Length: 154
Image (cartoon, rainbow, N blue to C red; front, side):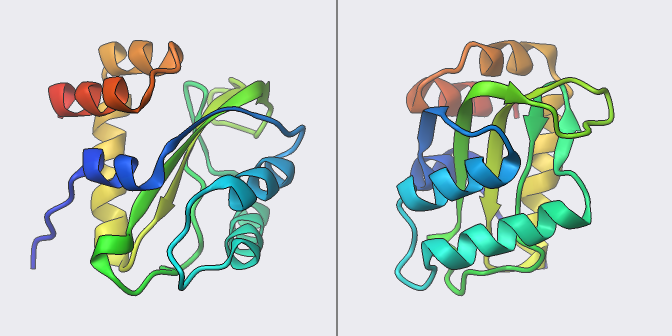
């Protein structure tokens, strides 16, 4: 069963946050868990705890200043509640990325199934390989510019 994933829609649902403050991933997760618009079924405390537990297992930094924090298992039940919360950090963080570059943007993945999660990761990995997309991401674009860049580069 193939899953249809619309990254633009997921980003729109999750929102784009700028100048997110924190000196550790845990501080960032606390700030964004409180600020983000979450589905009724997911509390900010649960999101915070799950992101911290996942980060303890292994860094979610993937390189090029990007991290993909996500819970260890799907926290959402409904397809239409899935989202990607984009966080541009106030100050880059050292998160043990494979290329040792500090993280300046986090894309927090909240999905309803492992299948959707893997499809989202696959599409994001494809985008992150494109220099043009990474250049746009480095400029910390607003939501509409980011969604346009996603559509153009997928």
